[in-house]
Length: 125
Image (tube, helix red, strand yellow):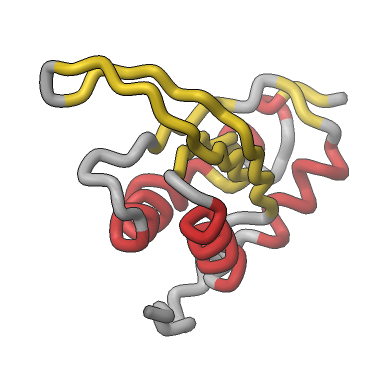
């Protein structure tokens, strides 16, 4: 394992992004689009998530799907977040980027090599 701040590939710029979705179709659309556009190296989709939260003054209790997106931090603000917002049905989607503190060097290098942020692919609708 290497510390994220010590890798020559600038690994402190890799991150884990958490995004919830209302159903598997939405999660798969977002995941496939991010992968096709090389904005993510990997997206895990977890079902069976129960979310309790406040929305418009009321407590909500919903079943959701959680995506764990592995990417480079430099792609998050200007590419990944806008793409998710464009595809997501929620008015305020959860998009939270977390830093990576430690990472296997081979995994880190794989994330970096698979995420060029290629914007040449048209958005499928």
